[in-house]
Length: 247
Image (cartoon, rainbow, N blue to C red; front, side):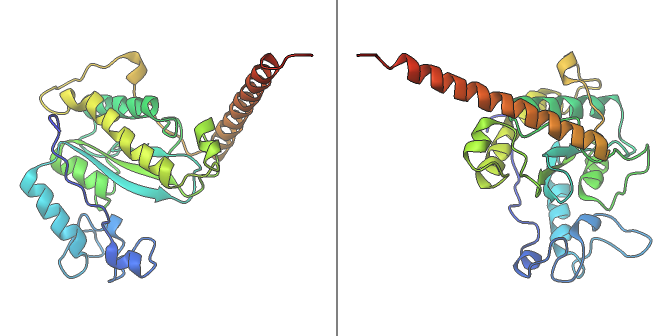
């Protein structure tokens, strides 16, 4: 609380959600394509996308130093960050901030990782009608999309296994709480530092979406988990044997 002032929108699309819409509001507008006018329509407007219109006005009034847009992804079985690589403001400063943010996030929570995610946009090819891209450019700030997995059957630690292994409420809540660790790590460098200096462990990693790489990652993760399960079972057996006596 001493470091940040948080502005939180718990649900950006209540009218669409109550209608069972995955992406669109009550007017049928995809709210993650309403953050700038395109060649097809004007956006945001009070009539077509009032949710975005008023949220953006509030951001303009307060300013933004760091921004996270929280989503659920239908394709990848992991949590990941999508960043501002294709935006005009992308350069050494934002690259360092994003790299350190993701690295700190991954250290704080076993569900976050840096290697997998959407392939970054080519330089200057970002769609500015997408929320985090628009915010990055508008405020020249660290702005990312946090994608949580709908395909979360792939657990990342033994604690997740004990809760059934799927990415549900407790793990999502923990991932949200760990945002504070990531923000605290980069906080001193968000403003007033032209070239943030972080350690080698915080270097930016360009994510990949290649199916073969994703499959190999999941296979390696499952193998590591099997080793953890076996080690835990062996430790339990050893403890049990140590507590027995022969009469």
